[in-house]
Length: 509
Ligand SMILES: Cc1cc2nc3c(=O)[nH]c(=O)nc-3n(C[C@H](O)[C@H](O)[C@H](O)COP(=O)(O)OP(=O)(O)OC[C@H]3O[C@@H](n4cnc5c(N)ncnc54)[C@H](O)[C@@H]3O)c2cc1C
Image 1 (cartoon, rainbow, N blue to C red):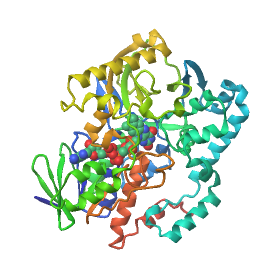
Image 2: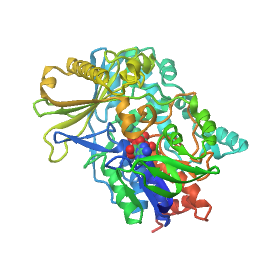
Image 3: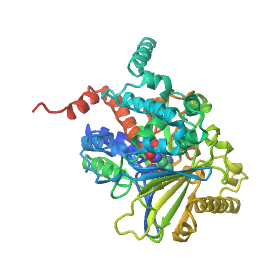
Image 4: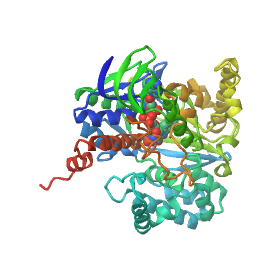
């Protein structure tokens, strides 16, 4: 039995972030990760000599002075060498190809939908203003659940004054906003097809705003968790891989350690970087607290799951300077993910640079098929992932590949040297993210702003990562680590916010 100040469950970017912040302030931290590599949803893997990421494409937050390099620098981690993503985009809507070039997106929207040029002007003006408002103010926001009623009202009034466009359209459902600005089904579906999930409009403003202006780590996404592990170890933190936590030990409403599958026991305050649903199932010793915690999240909607089709492409197919291809139907923006089948679901293909030393180019096609698709992917019959699951997976894989080939031609199909499908069941199995969610809770109008706290009802049991404030995304979960560490260090007089701001204050010289 070994003693630590904090035990972090999971080496996802949320867990690694809080571990780094705490280790920086001399806390004895242990991170336990069930997988053989760190990173969770930010890991990369190789098949037949080709390196794939789990589906994240370029990240705007990897740019100089943005959140990810800032966090890494604060921890003393090595900086990440990146390559710019400056490609074009093809959107196929009902089979019709629309081309959007790097740096010319708005002009190209007008060329593709000339009769709706005025709508495009208005929509892009709103999207641009939402982005400006979103990024105005450099101070990190305080979690809204920390505010009392008076502060919340004041915050609401201030936001309405300072961020009018964001408050009017940014936090409304995408369908509602698109319907308000244009009658063109093609235009609406093209905008939707880039990130085809029902979300608030700000997500689309952001995606199109940073399109073709992102950075990709030269060594793949795995470079981000790897850098965070280097700083953690440098500051005395410990990471144990292949260590699955199976029990969180609780006595008298107080978490005091964990037990792993291998039977090892570690003592310390517990921080879980895993979905709350799984975390609560591991609580042993004082289950009476669990019922209330489970009830509180029982009706919260989870972000729709996805499938990912990993494809390796040889050089016989010239894909050009394209970084993304979307395939969608003209009414998809009206639909819920539950309505999609393998034959009809939108497809977003992220095209990655070929890694140095790799023979083939990696592509990842993302398809919003739900966790419950075809009777939970034929796994609910009690036989887990049996033959029926594998047969369905192959069928979906074949259908998606055929649909892509129909749009890109037989030459594309001939250049495919490898393909493999991940389902929401795969994502859940690897990360214990409930339903395989890759974003935590749903981000629709009715859910937006209802953040889950990092503190739980159990003393010394905390949550970090995409399910708690400020939510999903690599930079988001790293920020959740900052917020939790700020809280935890406060009791001993450390002002993390002040230290962080001081560190990045422009020097007066
Ligand atoms: C296809 C795809 C596209 C995405 N696109 C973007 C994007 O464009 N931009 C963006 O910012 N973000 C994107 N994301 C989202 C982003 O990757 C996630 O929001 C974020 O990485 C989640 O981090 P986390 O630390 O909360 O959780 P996770 O990464 O899920 O980490 C949890 C960790 O806990 C480990 N674990 C689970 N159970 C145990 C246990 N019992 N014991 C020990 N360890 C355990 C898991 O193995 C995992 O390593 C995308 C994700 C995917 C999959």
